[in-house]
Length: 129
Image 1 (tube, rainbow, N blue to C red):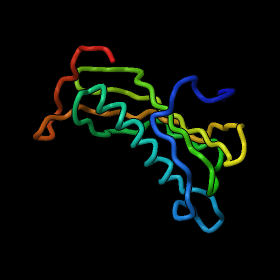
Image 2 (cartoon, rainbow, N blue to C red):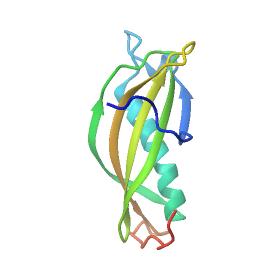
Image 3 (cartoon, rainbow, N blue to C red):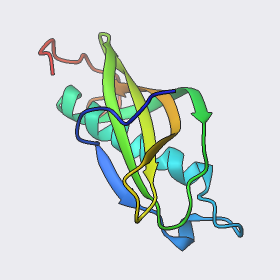
Image 4 (cartoon, rainbow, N blue to C red):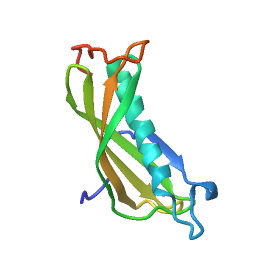
């Protein structure tokens, strides 16, 4: 596992709330996966210069729990761009509200496809980004 979060700005950062948790105060895995999808979607849409949709999530791993009140930072990096699709590595890190120590909590690869106004796959511009 990584020693610390990536040396970049997160795609999103959010504080967890009681509505996001189960009866034990642990944040739902589905909520965390949704945050990861939001972060990857922002990166994908920017790279595609338009709408991009999630078509797959690969290798989802949960390493540690997240508690109510934790700050979650989600980092997303494009690792592969094809003709219409892209693969994005996504990591979520938690930090307790009154701490500076971060912990990797989830990671996965999200695959997105750029789509046109008819929701059909479209080529991604060759511009790097």
